Image (tube, rainbow, N blue to C red; front, side):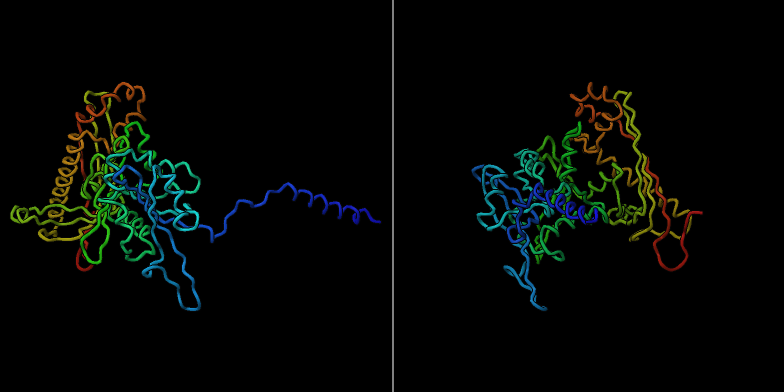
Length: 394
């Protein structure tokens, strides 16, 4: 018998023997055993328990061209569970749904303002950091009022409320620079920096019909608890100072006093904005220099004209002064409140860890006394008009 004829069955036998040592999927779950979580809201009951509102996706069945539907025609539903901890409240979800909650597709985490002001949100988010299913890219938001009031608001475009809230943050950050995304990972990093301050998007329900949700600024979290919040206008200023500005517009008052008294303003559409931070920590108090360069096009004229190069130069100086005044006012507010959300202390830690160790105990006071210097350069590339002569840099 040929040697090849003998060795072939032996190879099959050896390969088959390895199958004995391969583990099976003994603990796997079928799709019909899981309920996919889209978002979760965290509130506190009157007796101090944690109230968890969990929004889950409800798959629809399609027969031919007909789509299935869920309660009130929505492809999602919400359940409320209460317990002493987030972990136990999550364990109670199957008692309502009949399926295990699956967290790998979670889009968003809402935290009620009252809860955020009274509790360390790092503690309540501990489950989402430790469990293997939730993704660190899930967004975190703080709500005005209870989070349970938000999950019944119908999304305008997206399939679920959770996805609608997520896209509001993403689009607001990318297209208007009046919001700032904060994911689970971002929040963990911010609260573990030397200056333990974090910013979390703040949302409110509107009174319009149909009811909707709008982002109205950022909540400032200090040592795990919500301390204060800033408006969308100040979010705009914060993103400029931290060089996180993506796209948006700069509103500036009219040049003439008559229109200023009427609170009229013009708009510059920003095409590029860069800010450079130059700190000098050797001085006492330290000196921090911001250099901001803005390029853009006129977005709207209500009270100004720009038909000559001279008028353009005058308008550029006017916008520079207006933006500088705006940024200085925001920094004054932060210094008065001793809130280093710009991250100056973190910059000091990276540049000179030994000096930071000496100053960290009194950093809030040191921050309030820092001398800030701001330079702004504005370049208007065009009038923004699609017809007629235009002014451009020569």
